[in-house]
Image (cartoon, rainbow, N blue to C red):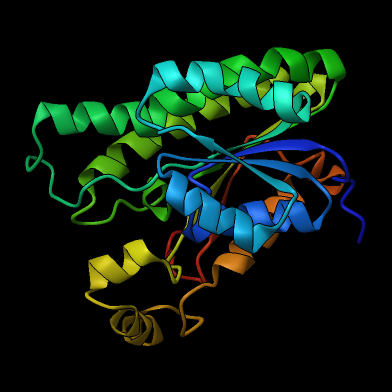
Length: 251
């Protein structure tokens, strides 16, 4: 299936490892020119070595809105106008509803809510002019069913979905789609840290996930590549779960 991504410029945040790297690799395989952003230059270089010459690294942290305001211009100068934006930020610290101080709330807000707002504000005008654009937010199943011990993620990812749903309705007539992917359990370093080990996470998934396994980051990347494609032009304003059937809710 030709996804129509050949030569399109994409910016993928949090792309130095895990799900973000898998998304960047999937877009690169489809012929996109991919700007990969992360706060660690060392990890970015590792990602470029894996993805190949289609990837161009940019150092930027999702929690730094001033840096994010400049980033799209730098990407455009290097690769051309951004036609695909993937908003992806690492998960905030674990904890209950009252376990975090206000500085931690502020950092989570900047990473999970302000970052998509700043980046979208920078790329949407150009997308409108060209009549084509794709924005995908890496979210969480916690926006459907809040997860115990993940209060900061529960709270701020819901706020991000509210913003992106509003945006999706405003730009749909300009050929721009805006979607969120509700992430379930994937075999990443973050999940390994939360579970004590990746083996422990796999064992829990066999018992708790209907598909009886963790998701593979490559599977996530394939879904996002499709959402960014010509074939997905009528899919917008949605929250799409990818979780092996873990969510119990009907909608």
